[in-house]
Length: 247
Image 1 (cartoon, rainbow, N blue to C red):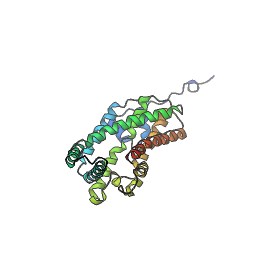
Image 2: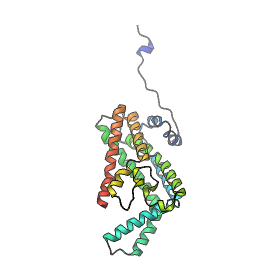
Image 3: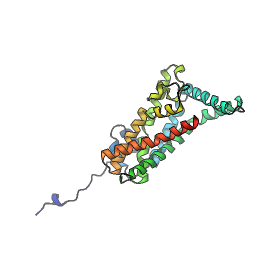
């Protein structure tokens, strides 16, 4: 006759509860625990905090990053005036003032769009591997996977403060990818777009996506790695297409 221990069902341990701020800290140390306790797919508040913090940091570090903004805007201005000679210097000056004010908020909106886009791609690719995951859970994974962007903003600004302003001639001047070593004025936009996808923070985010799909989607580690890589690959198409249109 079997004992109670032998006949008892295999019950998975209940994930520990934690505050949102603990999630934002733990994602750097024990990301699997964050994804496990947020597997219900609730991501709205986390996304709101992520976007708010990132936007605030972009605003606070605006002066440090000003040389990069100046160089990028000058490059875009020259390209726009080459395509349309009817554009006046006054019009470009007005546009500059607008973008200086709006850049932090544009970044925040772009970050939110990136979360939803990445989450959707992750969910669709996961379906190919029978991942047991709702769409909202995929958005949750994408939200927490983007938390390293906060560190990226601070690291970029810290570099900009100590670098020679003459070296801050493009957004990739403070990036951790091969595009950092490319001349933005003499290198094709396609090459820069591809090189920028080999970024330390992009890779970090991709690894977190893999951990999230492994924990929440109940797939194997190998499948999780493939899903994360395919998500990265599909995500690379968007900047590549943008570069091709620019060219």
